[in-house]
Amino acid sequence: MKEKFDIITSSCIPLPLENVDTDQIIPARFLKATDKKGFGDNLFRDWRYDKDGNPKPDFVLNDTSYSGIILVAGKNFGSGSSREHAAWAIAGYGFRVVISSFFADIHKNNELNNFVLPVVVTESFLQELFQSIENDHQTQVKVDLPNQTVTNLSTGKSEHFDINGYKKHCLMNGLDDVDFLVQNRQKVEEHENK
Image (cartoon, rainbow, N blue to C red; front, side, top):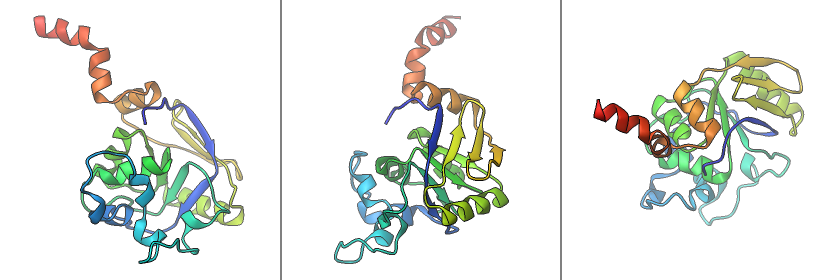
């Protein structure tokens, strides 16, 4: 979904588990499709549903007291295989931001390529977020891409996050890599003609 990114304020879905790999995000049996549609339905499939396809009431995505377009995840999110389908599932579910203290590099880039902003925070800030969300399931978090800050609105604490300048430009303008090249076609042609 190519939607311009600026400032997002939302409640959060907490997933305080470390080392969540891409097979847990989207199991391998769903990787046959080459179209991004429908992957959100199978996000965390084996954690969300039992073997008969019934929702597991104790899994956070099935708990209606939580809502929002920000996923707050434990350290080392997106490890394992480099499947882009994991980012497709996260975006397809409706998440716009994933906050963690560490992302696997390939998964982090796959999220950026799918218009999901991975925000890296300190471990202490992450734990504070988890505590705030546990205390109040409707805790609001503000993610300000132009200023590269994330703020826990229940405590007022804020942190700066890093992002590649090119990816920031693309997110803020709703551009994927091809859109960016097309937008700069004249510059590319001028360079080729030199």
